[in-house]
Length: 67
Image (cartoon, rainbow, N blue to C red; front, top):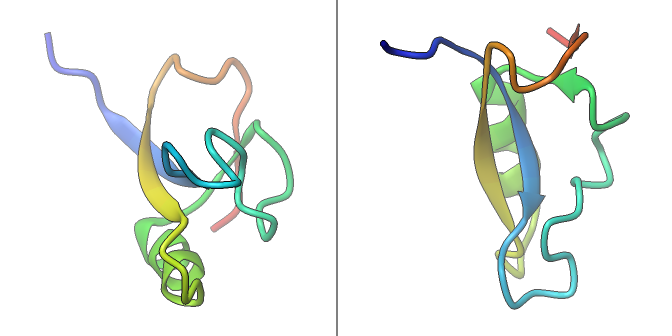
């Protein structure tokens, strides 16, 4: 059974000062964003500390869509 991607988050990459933390532009752990919004957040980081995280249905109990 395939899980459906419902949105994205940006989190810190492994071995960076922000490892597993949410990007500072994100509101909360239950908020999910469009891919374009997340790519823009990552693109503003000159040090390459962030990565895109796919959020699947059932990953977050009551997600808030920020797009």
